[in-house]
Image (cartoon, rainbow, N blue to C red):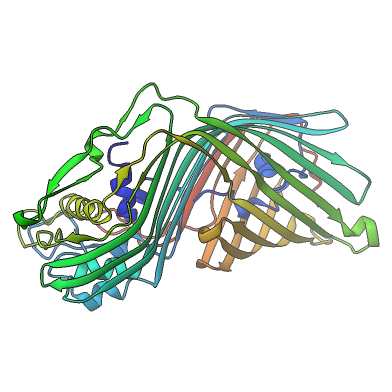
Length: 480
C-alpha cells in the first residue's frame, strides 16, 4: 500500500502487477458445453443438469492497451549486464524512445477469480450461483510526460489527462435463465458487491514554465483518492529545495501511509441482462440464432475515502536535476523507476485533506451483440460473430470477433477466433474438455505470444483463462 500511489504515478509500473484485462473469454461464446457460458450471457443454457466448481472454477487475467512493458524496457547496453534498463537510460536515444509512445498511452487490466460456482435446474429454468473476487486497473499516460522525463530540455511543458484508477471487490451473483417459448430465452443476474479497495489518481493539468536551466515555475491540479478501510496518510514530509534560499515545503510522505484493521469498505449492486433468439424456430431460417447481453450494469459505494490534493498554488520546481541516469550502478529498472516516482511525487505536491468522504463509482459495463450459424449438414460445426463494447469512460474499447467452433465428440470442443478493434488485431482459442466427470478449459482471446529473454511480454494486449468444474448429468448435445 505504501508504494501503490507512487507506482500509480509511474502507471506502467503500477499496471505491471495486475487491471492484468479479464473481461470474459469471448472465444467461448458459441460453445454449448462451456459451463461458464452464463458469464458471457445470463440467458445461456447449459448442456448438463448442472455443475459445481471449487476452488478455481474460473480464473481470468490479462492486459489490454496500446502501451506494453517492451515500450518501457530495453536490453542493457552493457554486455555483462543481465538486468533491463528503462527508456531513461542514456544509451536509448530520444527518438527511439518516443517512437514507442502514442499521444495517449493506455493500459487496462482486470482479474476475475471465481472461488465457488454452481449451476442447477429449478424454478422452471436454469440457475447459477457464483462467489468470487474481481479487480481492475487502468491508466492513461500522456506522451508529454514521457517527453518530460526523457528529454529534460530547456522548454515549457503542458501535461494533461494523466490518470490512473484501481479497485478490488468481492461478488456474489445469483442468476436465472428462462425459456419463454421455442424461439426466445431470457436471463438475468443480480450481483451483490462487497467493496474492498479503491484508488483513483487524476493529474489533470500540469504547467511547467522554464525560469532557468534547472528550475520551473509550476502549477498543478492533482487529486488522489484512497478508499481502504483503516487507511491513513500519516505524518507529512518536510522537504528542502535544492536552492536553500527557497526554504522548505510540505507534502505527503508515501512511506508513512498506513492501513489499520482493513476490511469491507462499502457495497454495491449490479445486474447482467441477456436474451437469445432462435431464428430457425421463429422464421424457419435453418441454423441461425442471435443474442445480446449487457453485463455489470451497476455501482459500488465506497464508505470511507481519504483524499490528497494539490492546493493549486504556483511553486518552484527543481527536482529533476538529479534524475539523469548514468552508466554503471543505478541503471536497473527498480533504481530508475524509484527515482522517477520520487520526482513525480515531488512535482505534484500532494497534501492530505482532513476527514474522509464517501463516493459511488459505476462499474465498467460490457455490451455483447452476437449472431451464430450452425451448419445444417454437420451440427457440430458453427460459425459466430460477436461484437463487444466495454463502456468505461477513458478506458472504453470495442472489438469485433469472428469465431469457428467444432465439437467432434460430446466430451470435447475447440474454438478459434480472430478479433479486430480499438486495441488492434488478435487471435483467440479455447480447448474445452468435458467428459462426464469433470470440465477442464484453457483459452485466450489475445494470445500472449513471445517473451524477451528477460521474460517481458512483447505484445501490448494479452490474457489467459482457465478453470475446472464438475458437471452433473449427461450431455444433451446432439451430434451428427
